[in-house]
Structures are given as structure tokens and as C-alpha cells.
Length: 251
Length: 121
Image (cartoon, rainbow over all chains, first blue to last red; front, side):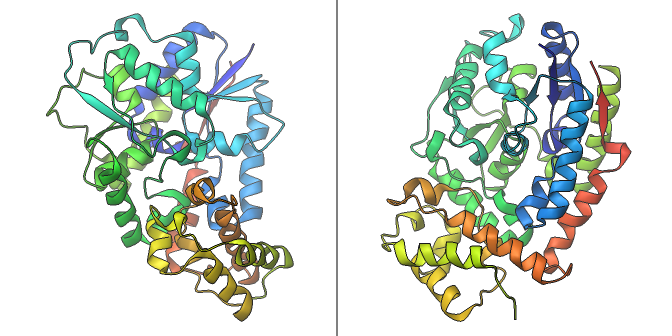
């Protein structure tokens, strides 16, 4: 099967190196992996610019078809929820894919001696996709971490505060939602699998790691600080998106 | 005055008529809590007056948590999205909220070759 991969905008803006490592790893399973980095247009969909959204979204679908991809592996739940709106593309989550093919050997059990207890902030666009929630829990346990789930998680998850472009339209309310979400979780050490959620959990007062931080990065212990909140800087975000492109060119 | 589409008004009317005002959706949603009224009243007022402050539909996080906890699974986010779509069309290209300029700018920037990449496998 010919597979494709798309990291999405926020993850590329957050950590170019981990996007590169993920592509290299996926290529060891899918040697003819196509790599696409193009916005799905969800922000336009969210603000109600339906015509502009359709144009942008169809451009992405055309690119995927040009690459003759049978199935797209999506790292972003926002992109995934959009791509599932069309019958023209088959799609799968990166997290269920990683769970299925297995983590890199060196990652399995690497955190077995860690005393860290993580909770999970599930992404709201995929609240109905229980297989993704299960895969994320399984990956964390495979790494060796202890997981304590929130009451409102999985299908019942709460938005991180940035959904619906609320962070742009009503930043004060978004901040309240972020704080509320962090306070509703059983621990302030929060794992996300969405780069925007990670940023929101930090802005809400939590310590937050993206799942790729834990797969590719160092083992985390109680009291460790999470990586800096790069998405709070517009300049760094765009610079990273460019760096992601450069890394992908050489991956 | 904005003329909302029949579909949008029908969605709002359905919520106004069906919401039992149980307020389960308001428990954990900061946006709905801030409105200080249950969805039946929010959408009832909208249908009755034909008006709504654009900041209201544009503050919903469109996360659908309300639908999950609603006894009738009312699609409140879909109704707010429909209002957003009407606001964009009816405003003839002018954005209903100044803050949305940033989203347009972001989306134009996203198209630049500096940030896009395709490699066929």
C-alpha cells in the first residue's frame, strides 16, 4: 500500500526535528512514503469562510491524489477530521499507525524507571475516535510511563481553549477555558498529541509534553520542566515551519 | 441587518424548541457559562430578533462537548458555525470581527512555498 504522511501546521511550527525523525521512522516501514506539507484550511472552515476553505482543502486533496497515495497518515487531529470529510482520500491517525507498527526499539520501556505520572489531553476534533485515545494510552505505557486518566477524557474530552479560533476571536475567554481545562485534570503533567493543545495546556498553567517529545526526546521525571512554549512566538512558529520544510527535504 | 439563511434559522429554531434548559452543557464550557443563559434562550432570542452579537458565535470553541452531554444530542456548535458562515457571506467579504484578519493573514502565509512541501514517494 502506498502511504503518505502529513504533519500539519502546528506540529511543524512546534518541533521540526521530531517531524523529521517521525518521517525517517515511517519510511523504514513504508519506503515509498509520500510526504506532504500543506495547510488543510481548517482555520477558514472554522471562521465560516466556506468557499475559501473548499478551494484550499481541494488543493490539498489534489496534491494527495497527484502523489497516488492509498492512505494518508495524519499527525494532526484537526487535519484528520477535515480529510475524513472527503471520500477521495483514505486516512489514518499517526498514533494508531505507531501503535500498530510499534515504537522504535530504543523507545520501548525507556521510561520504566521514571516516577512521572501523566494525564492526557485528548483532542476535541477526534473525540469520537476511541481507537486513537486507546493508541495514545498504549504508546505511553509502552514507553514505560504511568497514566492517570481524567474523568472528562476520550469522547468526553474538553477543548483546550483554542478550538473554533476562540484564541483569536476571544483570547480572554480562551485563557479561561485553558485554565479550566488544566484545573479539571488529575495532574498538571499533561501529555497531548496536538501541538496547539500542548501550548494551551502550558498557557493554562500546566506542564505539557507532546507525545513525540516523549518518543524521541529524553525520559521525563517528576519535577522536570517541559519544553518552552514556542507557539506563543509568531516568529519562532513560522521560522520552525520553514525549518520543517528544510528538514523534510533531507529526510 | 444580516439576513440569515433558512437553514441557519431552522437549526436555531430546533435548538430553541428542543433544549430543556438542563444546563448540563454549561457545566464545563466556559463559553456557554459566560452567556449566562441556556441554549434555548440564546437561540430563541436569535430567532425572535434576527440578530446576534458576532462575538457570541465566534466564541464557541466548536468542540461539541455540549452535544456529548446533551440529553437530546443537540448540535449547538453546528448552529454557531452556520451563523458564522452566514455572517461571512452577508458581510460581502468584510469580516464580522476585526480579530479575524489574523486568520486570513495566517492562511495566505500558509500557501507560501517557504512553508509547503511535497515529495511523491
